[in-house]
Image 1 (cartoon, one colour):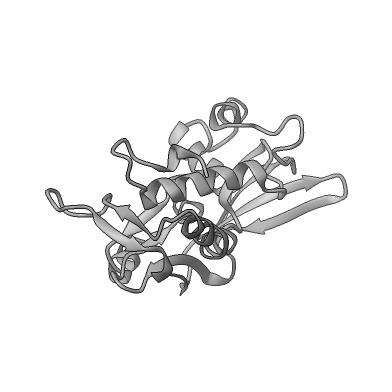
Image 2: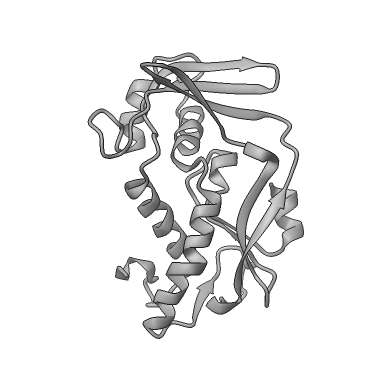
Length: 212
């Protein structure tokens, strides 16, 4: 596993582990992500954009946000970089929560333990002046959260045979990771719902629900 998961002080951090997981997910996934070809459309509580059904392996698929935005900025509702980035995050992370959470528990954790790593550091959500907290890897579990979305985001992929619609808030369920010892919540893919590429950490399930 790359040394990029370690902090400058040499400590392995949960935040960097999850960021690396999200990065690798984007590079290796085979589901279409595509480039924008249709601006933002809103009908009732549903908001959508249209993308070409390209994967990262195909020519023309934006390899990063800069290329994505160059195409998107001329489309309705995508002129603002912040708004466009939210759709970039959704198009890269949709349908990813269960895959990444299970992959972390079933593959990343065993590999780290094989290399002698039994715990990682968490510091991003701790109050100022608080010492970093250690989290045992064998205490991390996949957790399911159920919710009722007030608004729904949709990606419309345009194929030669017609349009395929993928809902971001599908089924009203979402998976994240919970430490059974500390109650800390780790969410590598909350950005698919909030429009961010950055994994999120919460001190408790209650704070997760409030922030979510």
